[in-house]
Length: 184
Image (cartoon, rainbow, N blue to C red; front, side, top):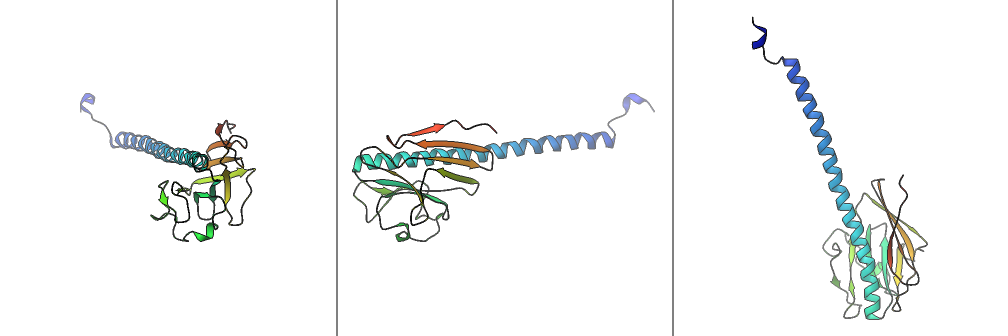
């Protein structure tokens, strides 16, 4: 038999198929991770926007407003300071329509321009606070006042033990600043 007419052997074809399978698996794993990281970055942006909304509401309405993190319910809320407590809210599922995902809903006890905003914390996100005291309801509020000041604090968000983002709420001005995080 002539050697030049010989095709690929079965072993050669299996090796090539195996290499293609390994390469495609690696590509799909990286694409999946980047998609999840993008979703978590969007959450961080929404959380920062929630703080900015609380500050703006306090300035416009002239009343103290708090952005409160409720770790047990895995939600963040904007509520006026001194409202009847978190327990006065429904104990429904935070993923339901009542809580929303950054969507405004009118509050019966609030002023005409005051709205209650909420944001569900994804399960892969861990939020740690520094210089933020817990309240009686088990929440961690950062309160903003009509004069522009706040209770201040530092929030660090960790996603799947990889993405660390830290932002600081200035006590004097209530402004948010994204801080550099050490690479680890």
